Every structure is written in C-alpha cells, then in structure tokens.
Image: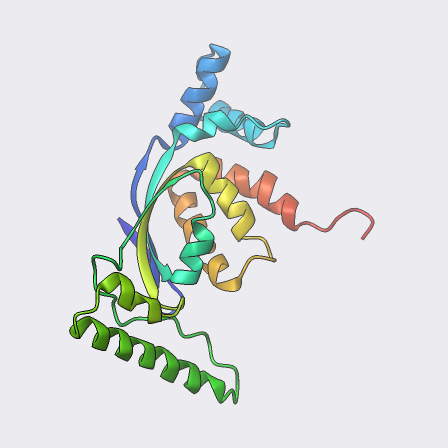
Length: 214
C-alpha cells in the first residue's frame, strides 16, 4: 500500500486494485471474440478504445480501486458529489474528531492567517468542552469548520475514476482538490500504466490544449 502526502496533513493511499490493464483487455477482447497477439497489440487496443467516439466505457469498468483518503471536509464534500462509487467516511457521530485542520499557505503579510488559526483552535476547544460535558458527539460536531480533516475510503472503477480526474484536474477545479487528483493520477499511472497513459494522451491533453483559432 503506497501513500502520498497531500496538503499540510492529508494523504491519499491506494489500498487495493483489481484487474488493472489486463481487465480492460479481457473486457474488450470478449466483445470482439479476439485473442491477443502480444503486449503491443493489447496496448494499441486500449489506446483505440480510449480515443474512440462514442466512448466504450464499459470495458474500463472491470478494473476497480479502493482508495483511502484524508482530506479537509470541504474537499470530501466535493468528492462525494461524484456518485458512481462507494464511500464510507469516519463518522463524527461515533468517533471523536481529531484535532487536525487544514491551514492554507499564508499570503505574505496576511494578518488574517493567524486569526484563521485562532478560530479553528477555538472551535476545537469548544467541541472538546461540549463532548466532555456530555453532549452527544453528533451535536457537538456542529461547531467544527469544514477545514477540519476527515478520512474516508472510496471504491471506484477505472472509468468513473477517470471521470473524476477529468473534472478535478481541470484548471477551474479548486486548488486543494486538484492536489488530491494529482496524487491519485500518479498512483493510477503506476497501477495501470497503459490505460492511464492513453487517458493522459487522448483525454487530459485534449482538455488542456489550446482551442483552434485562439
């Protein structure tokens, strides 16, 4: 299991992967009733499927990942809008919140940066005071900010993973979420090099290349 650090206290780890590039090849070749003539032919098949229109997405759904993520709550809430996948999050109804929160990089001379930290510390102080006084954890958590760190696991197939990457690597995506997408992309490339390479070449580069006539 490999873990990459993200932001100041977060991380992404690949906990399990099933199928890989071979699962995509198997899914495609059963459709065509064809046999592999070697690794080069398999790579060309994946590349052809990746750049084809309309998309042959089902062949990519046979490769599956389980990720572990630690991120600020606001990143997790954006993440969980991507519904084709399964999520389980550390529940602050049953667990006590960790005293960890995201601190954005300080702008030069920004006096509000220290005020931000004091506010987050004060919210955690109050949270711990409420829990110690007997408040239910699901009620006490109301005082915590969305910069507080959370953890969740995410099980997703390769097609849905690439859909998420397409959106969260876009320049319009929030910077903090893009850092997680970059970390996931790195682990994806290591695990499914042929599919991820085709995805970068035929999908991501197409999105970032200048439009004709501009």
